[in-house]
Length: 268
Image 1 (cartoon, helix red, strand yellow):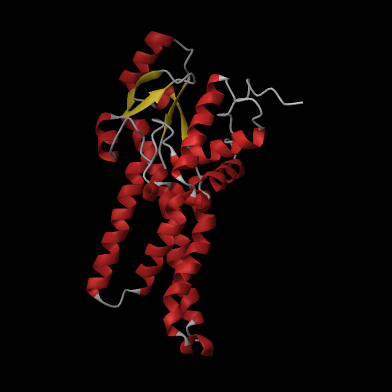
Image 2 (spheres, rainbow, N blue to C red):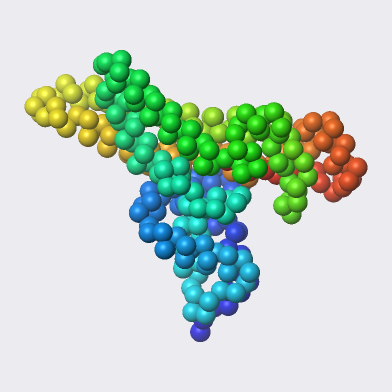
């Protein structure tokens, strides 16, 4: 007998997003680098399945595991605010393959100024693309968020206003996450490689030093990407009392004490 999935809440988190471990499990799931290899038609299928599930019209014969897999692909490839498909290089699931190559080469080719300049340019270009791809859709750039404020909503997703203080909180959390993501590889990998390069067999195969460094960097990122993303909830909760006085007055005038907290997507 088939299960009735018409009431299945596909947007309900599989793991508790109020705990660090729950968030790490969530991001391990959606930053899985294997999803980068999923063909476009399968991603489009995932979007259709998610949208149908939200409307309560799941196709007959659909199983829960199919919906969960569709949601995994959807979260990995589509923007949470707009639902638009993100460019493949900017997705968080591309952080491991993209980051391991760039970081590995930055650590390997540092002996000449042209090499340093080139790989720093590649790294910053990659970071800029990732930042733009995973931004809060209401604010194309972090500068605009700080100047105009980020869109904040109530728990029912109704837009309440824009807050510069909320933007500052979100940007600070993203910066901390990105530093945490890169730091272990950038700090520990040179120490590890220095030790390895002193070994007799490593001196004979210098051609493998760069590939090994890239591989080790990937090992760090496989774990650090979900850990860093999970440091803070992607959907931030902020007390109304922390917002700008004028926005507090607007909220209290319209909703009274019914809206004690506001919510916003800080981006990744």
